[in-house]
Image (cartoon, rainbow, N blue to C red; front, top):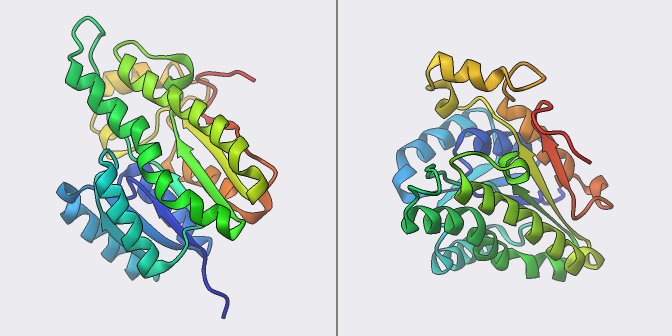
Length: 249
């Protein structure tokens, strides 16, 4: 029997992250979802749900903002599962404030988790991909990394930085069979957005030409497309999935 390809998804038990994991294991991948130690209960419940569906899935805790933690996660994953063929950098946080009120710790925390994590995590797996001659690295950014957003200088900067990382690394590894791409979701239906007041939700949706937020599964579908072996000629690009909220070429 052919061995399954291995996919690692950081932030894999969150709203978008868990949908990405489900898309990948439904597409035949062995999936490992990363999560923070504080999310242990959620992670265990999510894993139980996946396995009840017959998923070939597992979970691993760690801190993507800490390089040493990522080294340990990388070692554990590779010892247990072998070479990771698909890496999805999905972990992210927000600490919204206007720039006038933003504290240094708010800036550093968001840049560390959202942007520095790309170095911390990708560093653990990219050499294995290039040595094997195959890999897919998919970074989950945001529409606000393209257009900016009031009260999100830290978040917008971190998500814009992902595009630069993607374009540069894509050029370095494409001849080794590794692609690097970014997806920029717009507002997406998750537990967080569902808990917002109705008037705030309406104000957001009124800005979106599609007239609704994205479903997490719609973002996950794009990940599945880019992860496919047949997507080997697509690299260094950013794919928007925002319902027309921000349109560019």
